[in-house]
Length: 578
Image (cartoon, rainbow, N blue to C red; front, side, top):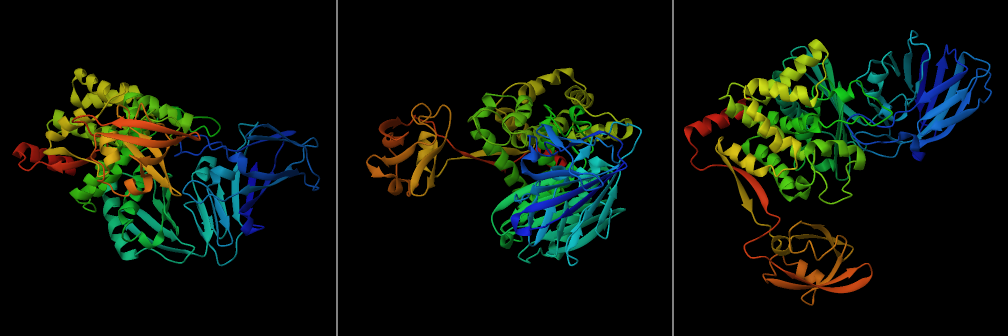
């Protein structure tokens, strides 16, 4: 059986991508077509069928066939005459310009195949399916993909590879490459405003961190790898991993080579590390991927947390980042953890499961922790713990290499149990299970243990007070929206927690208008304030009292000790080296 997809734009400004699917050598009276419901790398349901329009099926005589949907992602086509060649046509609405979606207009055709390439339920297991994609675009367009593309035609017998391979067609692209040993890397910059990266600087820095990542793993699961970088005119930050490529979307483009350059390096290193950690090494629950339902796993701290940590650490080890820049990355994670009351509500294991429940939105405040932020902190703690416990003989890298070896040589995806076993093999101390109680199994404030560990490496955390009086003394954040001052966050156990609600509009403080009092960060040093608040269209007066010797919203900064011991310095050097 062969599936031939012709992808085109009949009306580019409508944002609809036209898909013509020809199914050849089919021998079924009823043909079931499935469209994925989520994409790997985003642990929530995407329900891509919401973008499908004008779905029709025809036999070889161009006669319409009956089509019935049986659920949100399955179309059944009734081929009563058992015609061997069936044609399906539909439109896909592509107006979401990010690293994991699809975007189409008069200047570009960009799509992630997982969104719009359907597959046939094959009733004959012995029959192989061949997939062909024809990208029907203007002749002056360049087609960018990690798939084997000849002219405008892509052929594969691997549906998983197709879904994992974004395709971009546009004339607004510039590309360059670099090589490390037998591996070749391509950097493609797409900018519809015709502004591009500084090739010389980017090539130098990308080569440095790529070498470090290859050195970390030893071998690579690819021969060629593509960085597909979209530069937008407005503020944006997003990256999505694939086995042989990554798509990165950043903006505004005029800041990429200055203010946003570290973000470009950080997301690029992070996504490249993912080629091993999640695209090759994977939890058992995701091996293989099931595109039609949730792929629950409690192990997000490994596939996202470890990647977040090593994405930054390997930039540091390769000297692309200095100590200050690496510390800045960790500071952001520490500050988010410090301010997240979810650390007392849910463990990181359960929070990983709940990504599938509430996606990446904050529906219930202080409900859960982040597999990225807390996962990164836990990864650094595990790294330091292994270095300290084994007196520099082992590090978290050894655990990662053990998982990699199990996967590529023995085809064994990991589980929580096998991960812990691998960790304990290196410490050789079963009492270290207590370490996992403090980090994984229960809701925990990670900072006390983190501060203890960094002290062995000549570091400490400097807590600096918020510059805003309302944050420092009363524990609330305020955002200005069209001249209104809205309560946007409240810390548990703060004076504001039992008195204010999210989305309260603050009209005045001590009879001074909100605009005037919030314009002066240090205006208020009073122990008590009176707020005039609009809550659900009702004006209320609310009294708040600050707490003696207690402040909120401190910012955390990782720093070197002024006079570290020789042993602490030695541990720190080893942390950077391993």
